[in-house]
Image (cartoon, rainbow, N blue to C red):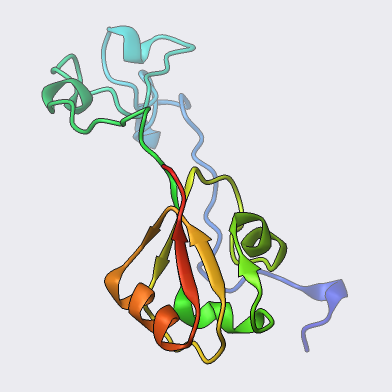
Length: 149
């Protein structure tokens, strides 16, 4: 019965350690599996895992790709269906969206998209509106205000 006091690894899970440099009959004698001469045979020899034997490394053979626009604007996306949590007649701007938890993190601009349904009249202030979002907000009796950006 296996208990904490007598646990053993399963049969075949452990192997005896390799005893290098113990005579030619051991198959790992003389050069101890390191081959003849050269840097790899010397003590303290290490090469990085990506070393390719002097061949031009793959990181240098492949072309550089991509580009990051450091002037790109980050848009916060909010759907019309998420605006139902506000009270009827409320003015919903970026500060109100952050307070409600609909915008998290740092964004430069806000865009309202038309996914979902809106049952209450709201005044929504954002940098951009999709056509569907603007029509759903006005259909519910609300209005949209576009601010600069």
